[in-house]
Length: 361
Ligand SMILES: [Zn+2]
Image 1: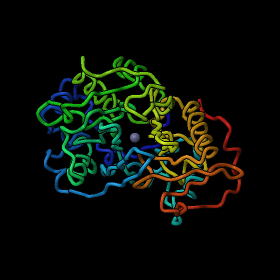
Image 2: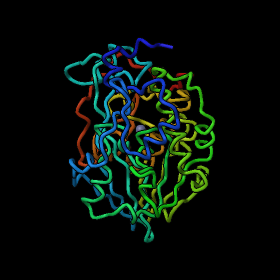
Image 3: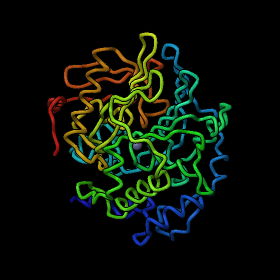
């Protein structure tokens, strides 16, 4: 495993979890909304009120036939650029990270934006953001409040996968559910994978971060035990809202298709994290992609379909609102956001390989 990916200062920036923190403590922390995890603790949790300081009206509305979709700002997290492309040659990665050619290990900020789907009289939340687990994030409730929606009005929560930036706001600061009236859904494969507390040996991240991811997933599933509904890809969880098999990023990672009146939105979730990286180099994968070969195959399949059918595409982590369209070019794809702008960091393509090849293991 390549631990050199993370220098100590980068590890500090990830605010890694103390190694000795137990799952029980994590669940208690989820319940308490605060945890003194020490100076090196990842879980230097902000008080629950912190999210309200950043009250934002950052919500982007999309109409898909009769269905309304709101892209909701949850804030950001940070990581080294090569976190998102662990198999990229450093010089090539530096090229695509920006015009100033930052070092691959330089910190990159990544947006988080869950979706709210209003369909058939139901409000369906697609992921919950990071919650209080990440100081730069956890704005979801404030964003919902800004658009006049109370947590009690959410009818369903789909957890597309069990990474902390997607399930971190399931539990409130009293140990109850943030969305108390919602049905909660997760892919059966994803549930079983995280319930078994996987080693995550294949991930090129520090052990402390593996432990954190495992503990959040198991902690949230523990709180939801007996309530969460295990589903399969292809199931329609609300009118016009259908899950799509997108395994790779995690074993049970789901994309979502939203369709109404002949219009469709394909929400690819974490099948790609950064347009400048994963459109031009779809064979580059992230440090937290469990199954790199599947990650690349899923990404290619979703982009192929989006390009062939000219589908509107939404993402969790592209710069807000992360909505656009994908077109093919000779060696990959080009992302055009919903304001008709091209990505900022379009770069030269010399030396590129066939982007449709399957790489990784
Ligand atoms: Zn994510």
